[in-house]
Image (tube, rainbow, N blue to C red; front, side):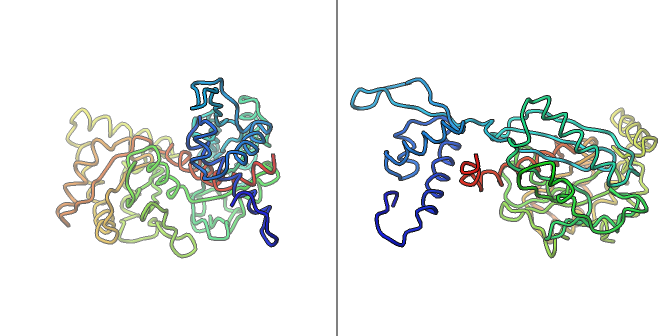
Length: 389
C-alpha cells in the first residue's frame, strides 16, 4: 500500500494519508520507537523512517536518546511528539468580558487572558479587545500567529450552520448595542488576525463539550448541560458523544421556551449569580452565603429557584433520557445548595435515572470546550498542517 508502482494511483493522496497516520500514531503514543510506529500505522519501516525524518526537520518530532535495545542488539530509535508544534486558541465573547485561552496539542494550558467590557459594549469594542488579547498572549508565550493551528470562537446567541451569529433577538442583552442588531460573521472579522481555520459555536454547546472533556460529564455519551450566565440560559445537548445542533444550530435555545419559566427565573434574585449587573450579582452571592449559614429566608429563595427550574429540567429528562444533566455556568456557584432541592422537585414529576450534577468548571467550561473543539480540528487536518509547515 505504501510503495505504489502502478499507474493510476493517487501518490499525493497516499503520501498525505501515510503522513497523517504516522503523526496521529505519534501524537497518541507520545513517545514511540520506529518499531512501534511501524506496528501502529501498518506502514513499512522504510516509509516510517522517511516520514519521521520529515517530522524532525519540521519540528513536529524530536529523536530521543536510546532507551532500550532492539532484538539485533542495536539501540532502538525513539521519537517524541512535539506538543508545541501548533497551539489551539479559543476566544469567548461573554456578556461582560472577552476571554482568550491557548493550549498545546495535548491540551496543556499555556495561558488565559481576559478583558472586562461593558455589558452594553458594541461589537467593534469586543473585537478590538480580542485582537489586543491575542497580541498579549503571543508576546507572553513567545510565539507567532503562524503557530496557531485552529481558533474556535464562543458566542451567545444562535450560531447558524453558515457560521453567522444571530444576536438580534437578544437586543441589549448580547454582544450588541441598540445599533448592532442582526447576523454577524464574527469569524470573518477575525480572519485577518489568524492564518488558520476559524470556527464558531454557541457558548452553551461548547460548555457541554468542556464538561465532557474535563468536567462533571466526563465519560458520559448522552447528557445535557444547563448553562447559565447570570439570568441567561442555554442548553448544550450531547447525543452519542456528539453535540446536537438541531435545525440551523437552534437546539438548546431554551431562553425562548415558555416551559423553562424564563421570565420568572430571570426575576428571581438567584439568577443573577455572576451577572454583569454587579449590584444584583452581589445580592445573589449574599443570599447564597446566607443559605450556607442556614438562613431560612435565603434557603427559601433558593428553593423557589429550584422549583422554577424543575419543569424545564423534568422535560429534558423525559425528552432526552440523558445519563446526566449538568448544572453549569454561573449557577454552579450555588450547586451544593441547589441540586438537592432540584432533585426533590424533579423526582416529584418523574422517577428519573438521570443524574443531576453540579459543574466544578463554571463558566470556564466554555473556553475548555472551545479548546477541545480546536484540538479536534487540528488533529483532523494533521496532513495539511505538516505539508504547510
